[in-house]
Length: 402
Image (cartoon, rainbow, N blue to C red):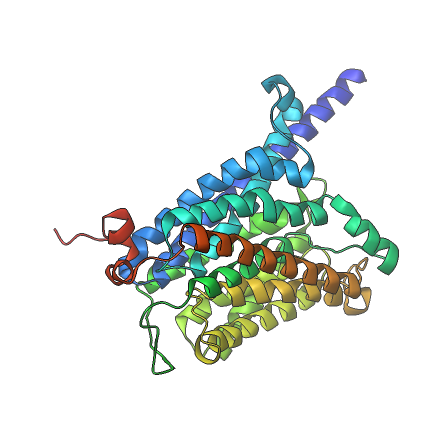
């Protein structure tokens, strides 16, 4: 009997390790999606820089999260013998890998907003500070119960802040951090002339679409495998993610009037919004959540560029910041039993938790990029920006005519 129990335990631990490892690999693949989404959206003279930023940011994120961030969020460090780290088939190590891919999404999100005019080195410094300190501070508060915030919400309002896969913890955090960076960085030269928007068309729609599709596919690992164990996996998360993605696509197609840029960002808006409540909502609630997110992105991106004259190149604040906020709140609406959800959520807790995430991201973004702006400088010179980040920073263009 003891041998049977041991065999079962081994199978469970091994299966859970493989499960979360596959999730980590799928979310790691999403970073290729971030890269190609940016490559296709920026002008050709900035394509090499887009690719270089995403990979370099991931490497810096891994170091910052391994040595500092993961310890701040979960109180765990890896300064142990390998024999200790490999307990339960190394599940603890693979869990770190999985959560690292979430943490590294923050600078990948920011990258799209500050494209075409940001210095390379200072951005890597910002990545280190954000992933080591700001993101894990909020991550630990929500996903590990640090500082008693979740316990207070549960006592006061009957439920803690629910964010299953990171509408607020990851996406809103990244979007609002980017908002501060974009404002401090300023507009691209020539983006506005006589107070009017000057069109800077995407360099490569096929690359933009490829980036969107890679993100869409990887997102099912992002959401479904946030259960982190086979026992907790739910087909509801998968179908809700699907319906939100479809809702965002259709809404962006209609509201965006067939524009391919809006069309390929619409499903991403829906997926951002469904992360928080994907384990609770009815699929119809997920469809509505995604559709509102898709329409919200089109409206907010247009308003940001045309009315408010904020030069957010990929629209990461509307996509991740605003749709992430909507996702946090939507979880408190469509997660309720009255709307066909599984219940166990409080709308008040969702609003408070979402607002806290926005405040921390805003303060953190202005603090980090403000410090770097005054110390190192965060913007390319006018000549460097004119020549493009590819030649100015990396000394090579994206294509060769030879």
